[in-house]
Image (cartoon, rainbow, N blue to C red; front, top):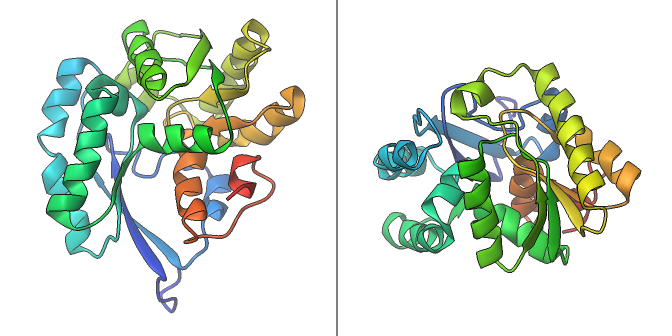
Length: 247
């Protein structure tokens, strides 16, 4: 947004760790939202995606929300699918409700943005191209099951937070293609493909994989942007997959 542009909407994003303030922050993803939608960010400061690592980091959540609201955020989104799934869906729903009640702004999380987007597109069965460790993958399966979405297959490369945050943009995109195709080979009957996580910047893979398999592809970044599109805050986006063009 230029200095001359007055924001039409301001939203706050809580990143899991330093260097992942926006998630899916490739140059291509900058065009997902119009310039008059201002994104504010801060950092939860997570050290790892273990259950204990998530619990320790969540002690800083309220302070992060307060900071963003004080700077003008009209809603706050907690990034990080591993954070959502390690907490569990019931706790996440309670967190969202409590955020609005105590902070006065709508709350959101990566996990609930994904669930809402999948429900919107009619997805019942999903193939997941994951790079995470099995503990995180198992928690993701439970999270989606709670939302009525069946995971047909789940890939793994055993990653925890440090491996994820150290990936280059090029390495992440290459891995997104590799794991997305692996998942679809394992479950061609899936309604859609999910490439979870923001650190690997999977957005550039979305339109190509959708063309290859004729199925919608979900990522952290496109589901988060879709929330604003669905609510009429931002216009639909073409060229980056079915979800962003389907408000």
